[in-house]
Image (cartoon, rainbow, N blue to C red; front, side, top):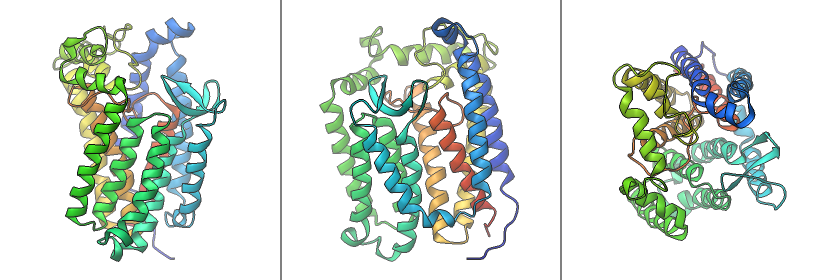
Length: 365
């Protein structure tokens, strides 16, 4: 296949770099107190975040220079490797358990989270599948059932860890891609109803998830237990006001907000930088979404269009859920904020995916 390259979308590059820079600063600010208490090193988390960022930038540089249609040839391999890693992490003695979930592979602090890379593997596979069978997507049995079976299998393996947050992002991104490819509205509504019933069952099956729902509805019913995270998050956001308390001046990061450098980093950012800081981050994400959507619309072929849709949809869904949790719109799910939150697998995966998106932009019409 021969196409004419042009420059990548500089709006995507600029917004990504700015969000990454803000994230590194905020990871240090949010984690310094916790890091000193845990390991005696104020810079423990930010040093690792910088390392992850460098690895992610290297991956972005590689993927921005690999013509995106090459991934079509490796789609099945990427999916099979993803499934193999999801199975491997569940083997007793192999997977690492943190925070009640067995979701990591590696040794000690040097580990990866296979479910994160499964999201990208699924996006690449679905982009290939849907681009080759778009004329069949209106039929449930011939078009929708095969990918739904694969998505369901991946979701089941992720839930065995368990990791409802990552599973939700994977399913949401996959459904978005199928809808864009031409899925009928009645099929979308039907899947939505099945999803609601399924999620209700998953919540009812795990007492801690049910407690999170009750805490979401009324956090003050258990302010020192299940409602603690949301209450402390709102305590951080409220005093921030318009301009914030000042960089490094957060009170809630002093062991009040749990995981201030990961799931609730936006709360600390809002406390220190105020409405202006929070709005700036949201505007940068909106620029990223706008330009990513533009890449999807102007991609030269269906594979590129669906691939771009999946990548930008994955990032958008994570942003919406994370910030929704922080401000009390959704129950706590354990989803990080892309490009800002501390975390090696998530940051590296996101930058790798954005590199692929930028490569597609080089061929956009």
